[in-house]
Amino acid sequence: MIHSLRFRLLVAFTIAILLAIGSTFFFLSTAIRGEIRQFGERADQLRVARMETELARFYLRFRSWQGIQPAVEQWGNLYGQRIVLTDSRGVVVADSKGESVGEQSSPDPSGRPLSIPGLRGDIGTLYVTPRPSAELGIQSLGVLFGAIGRFFFWGALVAGAIALLITLLLSQRILSPVRALTSAARRLGQGDFSQRAIIKDKGELGELGHAFDVMAENLQRNEQLRKNMVADIAHELRTPLSNIKGYLEAVSDGVIQPDADTVRKLNEEAALLARLVEDLQELSLAEAGTLKLVRRVENIAGVINQTVAMMQPKAAVKALSLVTELPDKLPSVNIDAQRISQVLRNLLENAIAYTPAEGKITVAVSLPDERAIEVTVADTGQGIPAGELPLIFERFYRVDKSRTRATGGSGLGLTIARRLVEAHGGQIKAESELGKGSRFSITLPVLA
Ligand code: ADP
Image 1: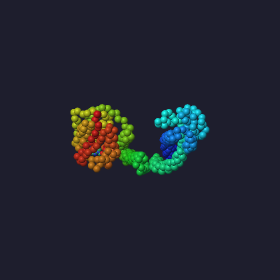
Image 2: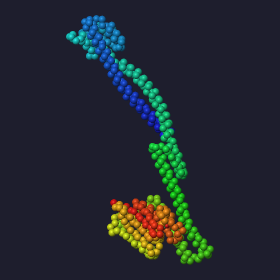
Image 3: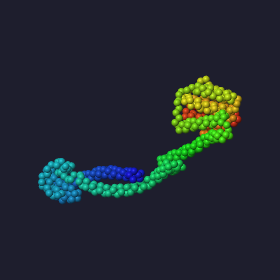
Image 4: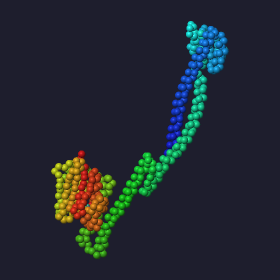
């Protein structure tokens, strides 16, 4: 409950609203207090000024303070303040409370001296207490703030209710995709890879849903690939195994003799199995990205010459001419020489296997631009049908499915070659013309 999104949203909204209301109340009350105080002071000053004018007018008329007491009393009652008037000698001549008339007042700096233009000296002093409506102001301010406070209290209650409502609505909007995602993730975790979140939200949640869907799709594809791979492997292993089993059964039934020829055939099938398993291991390493390249700055011409020399005997058996066309100066490349040699060997093995006697195989190097080096292996062999060209890099793909296994490889050669070249940051591609020959090219980045 405490950790639920809904609760957190509610707390966040409530805190935000209370803060907003509290700060508004604080600033408003500070501003109002200042305004009211100023207003009170101005009214006070105005009142005292009016009294002063009235008193001056009275004195001018009667030249004495005789008879002023009723007016002072009236003002005192009217304004709720104590008003005391003394004459020029400091004797109280009027008091709104009527208490100290006739007494000598002690000098007090808060008194306002009264004078009339044209008359020398003061005609008296006016005392108004309390001074600027301090107590009165605070009292009425208290009442005012009480009213404002009540207003804000109800406002806070209404805002709280609104916060609750917004939380419910908003959390519903946020939670429904989150719930959809959670249940999809849960089912995906249980192995149902067809799960998709499908969130229509355009914001971050939509992005999250999209990322989830992409992940689910990848997982599903990988799962499918894994299943296909297992089926492919089983299929590929079955043929040599059943061949071996067939030979052995035939030998034990006495149908064929366990002579040197049979042993050679058994050996060939076993060799094929061994190669298949080896290639599979290589491929799984390359596909898992755990294949370690031991890269060094190399001269590609050296790698090519060595590999070609290694393959010459095989080419010679089929009376094929295997030649290289290398420019004099080549930029260095940062490669794992053994792996690149393995790729070349594979291409050369294919070229030798699919080129009839008297054919020609050429290994050439060109520089398509200053950042890449291109190694091509071209043959004058049977070629590959255009429709199958994009498929030959797929694992176990063979153009001639019925080809005898003794001559052929595992069908993994080009797949491994592509993985190895890609691990170097390069590319491998094939061009071919049926009946004329094929051309495989590897592009590798040049050392910057
Ligand atoms: P394999 O072990 O069967 O050679 P690869 O992955 O090396 O497997 O090659 C896949 C298929 O591509 C081959 O079975 C063959 O049909 C075709 N292929 C590869 N290289 C050539 C080539 N130089 N000429 C004709 N076909 C080729």
